Structure formats: C-alpha cells, structure tokens
Amino acid sequence: MDMNGRAATTGRVARAATADRHQAEYFLHLLTQIYRQIDLQEQERQVLDGLIDQLHRRFPLRALGAVSPISRRALVAVK
Image (tube, rainbow, N blue to C red; front, top):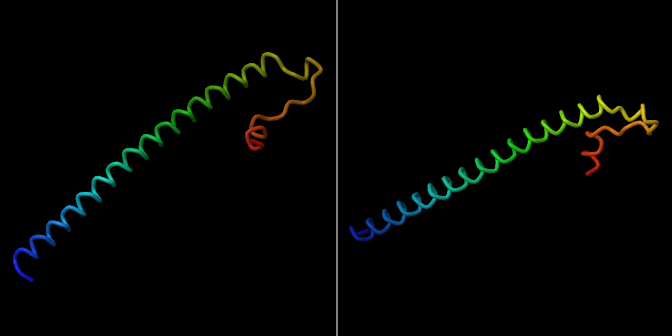
C-alpha cells in the first residue's frame, strides 16, 4: 500500500473514531437527561404520596362510612 492509501485509511479510521465518540457523548447526554427527569418525577411522586397520606390521616374514609380504601400501590399496579 502506498503512502496515499495509508493516509486515506488512517483518515477514515480517525473519522470513524470521532463519529463514535460524538455519538457516545450524545447518548450519554440524552440518557443523563432522561435519568434526571425520572429522578424528579420520583421526588414529585414521593411528595404527592405524603400529601395523600396526610389527607387520609386527617379525613379517614372509614369514618365517613365509605368502603375500605384501595391502596395507591394497588392502583398504580393496575395501570
């Protein structure tokens, strides 16, 4: 293989490696962003769970003569 052939091959390999690196950086950024969104949603869910629990303690459904409440976890599992 002559010098031009080696240079062309080296150039293609370098471009492929650069493209792979850029793609990896893109996916890392994307997955990190998704992870943060999931983390925030989990925090919001915990806050809502706390608010719902406080309301259940303050206004128990059994005292109102209602049917035994279904747990939130069971409702989430159904969805």
